[in-house]
Image (cartoon, rainbow, N blue to C red; front, top):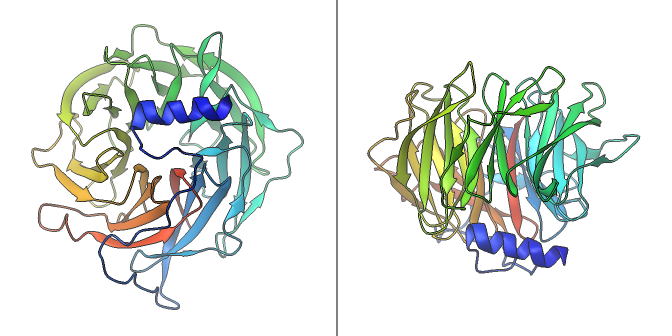
Length: 383
């Protein structure tokens, strides 16, 4: 029954044609030319990991100076129970993955030398609500939150954990109820407020206490009246929130965050590709007008644009061709490279991150095969 519900979830919010737990095709070279071989010794600055829900693994890669990826020693790493969400602490020492079937979060230490993962030795498993999906960690790296499909008195829930700074082990703090199935969550840049999108089409807003517990801000969220909100992310450089609305509307919605109250003020609803399922920021190269990227699962492409501190979206959208079923994406610490997890083709595609109208058709760099059906991706700078 759990596997069935999981497939229904993926079909409903992302319209992927291939079932998650079935086998997926190997990585696809989008350019039609041989994938470049990384130059020996020309190391990059990041490790890239995917949660491979269909294969019960985490795939790990190191990037080189061209942005191309090679597997880290020991990859893929076993991660039982349908791994789904990924997050890393801000110091890049610990990586966490949610297990959709097992209702736990598992932690790993990240090797500073080669990016290999070692499971943490913790006294107790970190039990979440029912069927955890995405994860987020506060900017200070002290608390971890999971968006759960169940566990909230008939609705969704958010599980809260404290992170031991020495061991990385998680301790349960509390559970907060959401209006409906919680699909994704984000914490704004000051670490004071958390926002969760739900299957009811709303954004639930919470204040974060000193001990990590959440208090619902009843009048400070947002309701799209669509029932198809999927992804949400807060800007790292401004009081701005972005969220995707999939289904038949296929919109990117922008908001301004009141830094004192956490209230959201809607700004704009801009068109995106089909079934937009994830958003990423690149605030490195242009903090005032960071580039944004949206993974469009249903149209097999990526939308790129820019935003600013007012929440306004640029006038020129670019649609970058991608492989099958992009579901998540992330930028490396230098702001040079964009990495996209493709659920349908079971690979990570690397792109030049600075994309505009002149290079959107040539931004692709290389693809690297992952385990089956990746659902999430995280880029970790070298610890």
